[in-house]
Length: 164
Image (tube, rainbow, N blue to C red; front, side, top):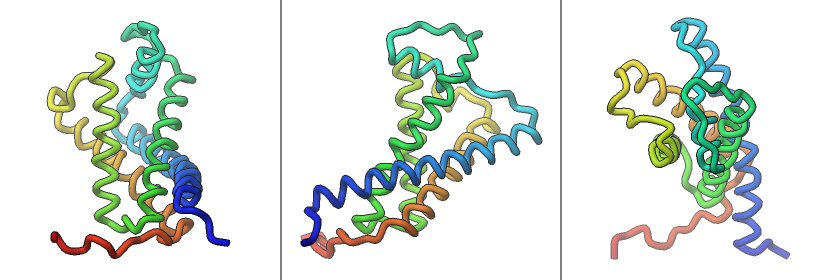
């Protein structure tokens, strides 16, 4: 008996979360290579964002490494679940990677700015903006590649292919 649409979506989201963890692993490796070349230090804004969301008031000098990892990997899994749903419904390929990159950037920036833990990217030096986009794009491409190999587009619809 075929799975219900809801169960198929839930299974794709769960697989997508694992794909997102793979994407975070690739992004982290890329960040470490970039940091070795540029001497850019680690950012603890993700940890400060999460701690603020949890009701704490971390200072700018705090470097909560474990919370940084929780936010880093948790965000990757959460947004990977979205990519899993996209893969099973036929939202795939390079255009999906580009859109997912925007979602990842928007998610991070929304939380960082809503909590006051970060500043708008437009206030950053251009080089840091480019580095952030590059790392998030690497995450999204890696997550998408894994998702599209593992999750078949069994819920892809052909309805609504015209505007009327």
